[in-house]
Image 1 (cartoon, rainbow, N blue to C red):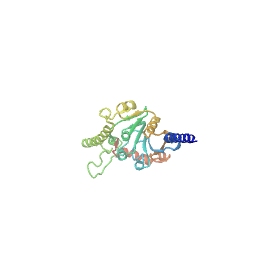
Image 2: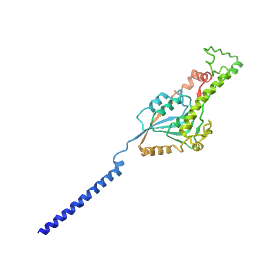
Image 3: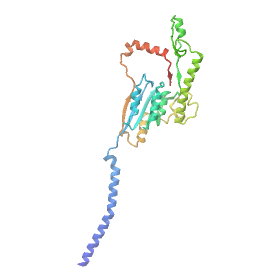
Image 4: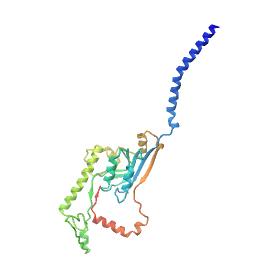
Length: 291
């Protein structure tokens, strides 16, 4: 009888030891299961990307730049994606570029056809640039257009009198040719803007090649060879890059699409004769710096 009790006691001890050994293994199995099944049990946090579409000149005449800057400075987004097809703009680009420089939100740029001059300057303030294979990129520099119609006015017998407060108040007016001093002055203005533009591009893209910074535009393949862009591909390639950047699936990325182009009524070009005349006059009367 005592021997039987002894065997029962020993069997119980052995079972207890095995149970104690199995408990950590059982806990480990549970933890591994939770880790592996987590994506299926707990939904991933959505990645919110502000997608900014620009397909026009980057100027305050074409775009609501105030609203664009307000959105860039908002804290509701995990990233910003620019989709650009723009030939450039004017000095309004500096407001956008300075804003991008002040925020640490990850930024991406997809060139959907063209990003030259001011549009490329915007791109360079992104963390990664992909261009569509048939895109053109570059045209780094600035210029001023002055249309001189004084000889035409003489031929048709129109005389224009300009009453001005100082000798150079009407510099760039199309009603008279530029003086030699004015021409040199405007050249210096263009050079100043171009120097800032080139210095920023060269620094951010680590470029020292004079050809890249010469004002020429390049096809996507050449632009990549010159380090003006990071990669070439269709839009899907940019989506792949963004999903890898955030270590999430493409399905988990939410794009908030925004456009800032001013929309004119369909009839404005037909009935707005005054607007048409003002547009023509602006080309003659106002000197603008184009980037």
